[in-house]
Structure formats: structure tokens, C-alpha cells
Length: 153
Image 1 (spheres, rainbow, N blue to C red):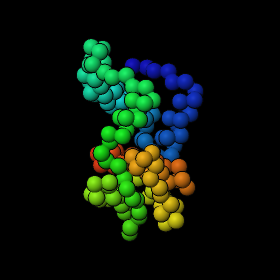
Image 2: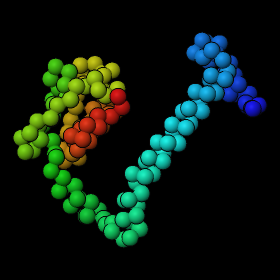
Image 3: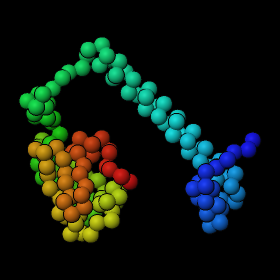
């Protein structure tokens, strides 16, 4: 099989081989195709995960919320933070029901790169449903943290 590669990609491929990242142009193209195949598989997995919810919406089983409805929805969220602090590199949150959750700041890319002062400058936002680090432009939801979603690793 012969494939023509546009000049901008040919230069990229040559650079990758020249730096020693790959042994040959074929290896670069093979790695790119592997990434494309993995991406297509992941997209199909996501479509399969979302399909049941979309089917429910198509059947009219969803709910339409105006601003008041959204306020009521968020008022019903039980996992709200009452306090947040940093302790020995851990982000600590006391929930309104007095449970505490903690996670190592190093699990989040922006928090890992922060100075101690930047990390300590954290606040509860949105009625305790989120955390905000103004110096880092980083926000995390309390619910997401409980589910283990800690932002970019």
C-alpha cells in the first residue's frame, strides 16, 4: 500500500523519526493509526453508555427545568461541603452531614504544580457544591470528588 502524506504531516513524521521517537516512518503511521482505532473504540463505548439515556429522553421520560427548577434540583443535592482546608498536601472537605472526605492534591495536575500558598487559597462555591482555587483557575465539584473524579491527572 502506498499512501501520500501532506507536507505538514510528512515534516512531523520526519521529525519524530529524526529525534529517535520512532525507528521508521511506518512506525509513526502505525502508532497514529493505533491511536485513531483506540479513539474510535472509545467513542463507540461512550455512545453505548449514553444511548439508554437518550432513548429515555426520546420516550419523553426526561424533565425540563427552568431556573427555579434548577435551583430546586441543586437544593436537593446532599453532598455539600461545609468547610475545606489543606492538610499535609491533602485536600480535606467536611460535608454538611459531618462526613469528611480527603484526596491527595498530587492527583490533580494543577494542584500538583501549585505552591503551598496557591493550594491553600481554596474556597467553597455554589452553595458548597464546588471547590474553587482562584490562583489556579481550577474548580472541582464535591459530588465529582466523592465519585473519584479529581480533574486532570
